[in-house]
Image (cartoon, rainbow, N blue to C red; front, side, top):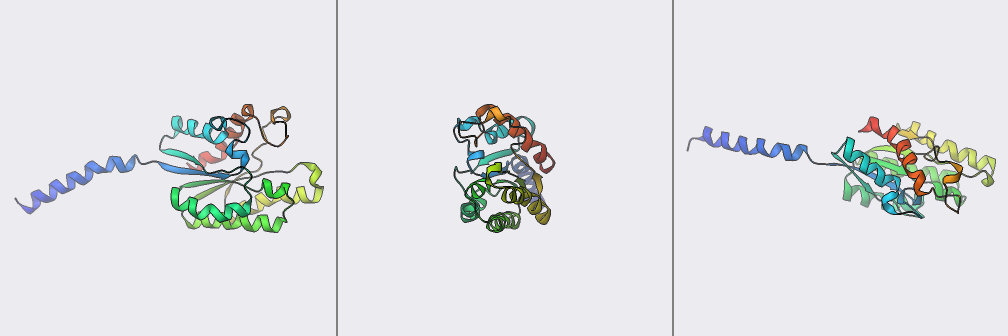
Length: 203
């Protein structure tokens, strides 16, 4: 058999494999706390799952992996981000952490340092980051709540990130559970749309 003929056969085999590579899915990693884990509601009703359903229709080459844990803090996030990045190799990380830090009165420089560490790890792994901002109830004091609110835009500017200034901005006062902290299932579509608006340019 002539070498040129063998080469053509090998080339044809390689070309036949290319479509399967092109159809491989890219991962979007949702890395957050109870607000993304779906606390108090069916997990399938949580905004992250609704995002997966939306992307199946509009961007089927993406899959959403929800690695959110109820009660998670930024310190906990720092401890497990390396494992998550290695396991899922996400193209995009949707980072939603900090609310539990704020509710516990964690010094803001610690929260900022932890979020910055997670962001740098994700970027170093080749992931783009969408940062979801949070706000605290006013009873935590004007100074602390104001500085907490501005923490997210500062991080986004410093690390050149896409930012959702406040992920719950479209959630009505009557769309929270009895604890007045966690949105109901009825609020999840609005949260998903808020996130999707800033996610689309990254897709």
